[in-house]
Length: 364
Ligand code: UD1
Image (cartoon, rainbow, N blue to C red; front, side, top):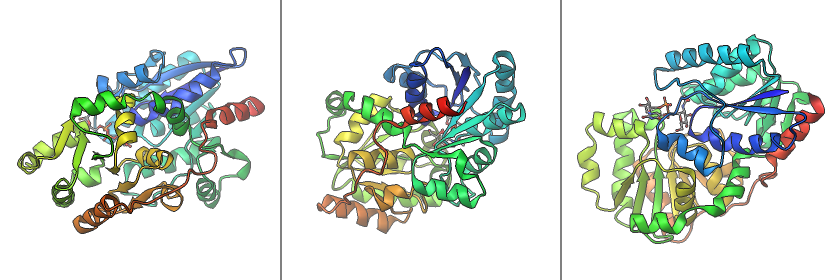
């Protein structure tokens, strides 16, 4: 059976890698195809992940690129439909919650190709987030729901998904973390940036709700201004954020902060190195909330809500929102030695992809 594995944007690559590897163990059953939509296309947003994760070149590259949500989604649909009609896969696996996830599940279900959603059932209950819409639509179309935690199953049950279609399997991003995380380029990246282990905080910021709104972005920057007086902050800058710093005229504010170190977006192993050795993390990413929980690194999430509440209830994550005082207060708490401790959630053990393939072999 041909199995399409869809990946489009940066966090998808880490999620498909272990599934691809597992499928390849059963050549008499599965022929995996990696479909890269091209939602992310710069080398440092895409190619470097294929190299770091030892993935082969995509079998099909749709070359979509950036555009408004409607245009990007529509273009992916048009090109993905052609790929499906040409190859006629028996299953389409989509991961996460990006526009590529939504576009490809929609096309597949209209062509009556079964869809498996990996990381199904996560909900922030905030429909102003484009990813929440992507999650809801994908889950209303999928045939197999592979979840990372029990609360995702509960969300799906409330939405009327039959329990027999849900499989709590763990987290494929954690599979990748446990496999490749130890190979990180920690020390070399740290020395290149002139920092030492546990003597810096790591910052990532790219949500439109944070970087497209000048008032909110300013509040975050004001907090950073105070935090960097106590600890260096490394800031790999997402292309959207870089653009917004310029568009909103924020460059001067950053220039005056001596202890913020900007880098280009980093590859997986470089980023893992920085993450593992950091004192704490400030982020608005979804995946990083999970990675810090597994690594036991305190994480402050600069959002009002999270679709990954298990990282708060069990892990090292604290939702601090975007209020300056709160961000500074929680950062100081960590710097004073009182960072949150956590435990690793159930089944985040590096075997999620194995469980997924076992279930697919039984059902397909
Ligand atoms: C996308 C996902 C988001 C995910 C994030 C991870 C959606 C709706 N959003 O957001 O869920 O957390 O990826 O990074 O799917 N750009 C480049 N080079 C690239 C890619 C993008 O310069 O390779 C620039 C473009 O100007 C683009 C902007 O970044 O307009 C945003 O890219 P886009 O893919 O639209 O959304 P992200 O913010 O990356």
